[in-house]
Length: 136
Image (cartoon, rainbow, N blue to C red; front, side, top):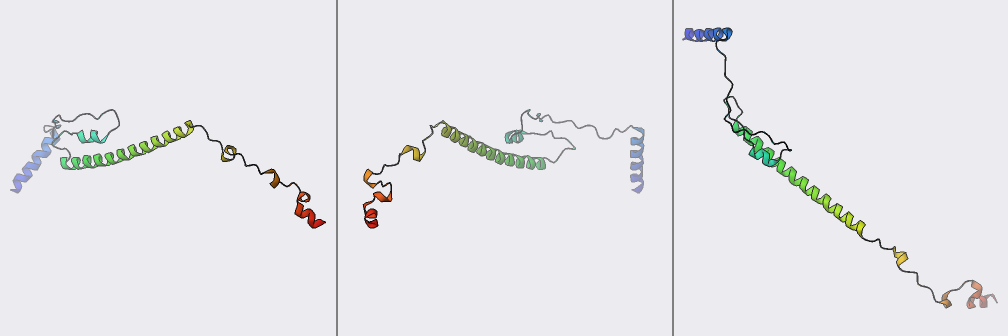
């Protein structure tokens, strides 16, 4: 049995050394791969992604798990970005509406101060009857 193993090793070394054994040939893809789109990737692009299956390829279950996780994360990020864009648009609308409204006059300008009746206005203490009576 040992002689058989030694013979196999000697044959393998001889075949590779002389170049008669080219090794593994290039794998041929199964043709399901589609090139990536030119626009930034979205969750839908990742969901539709397919890879060629080859002899020395990646484990498909691991690739599928990665793509599923990336799809989920991208969807959450896109929803968050959409909500922020909606908030920003609402703030811009509110700012535009406020700037489009005519300015209201200030409170002091809107209502003139009430004038006091003439009998309540006293210009000097001498004009007050009770003060002039006390001095006399």
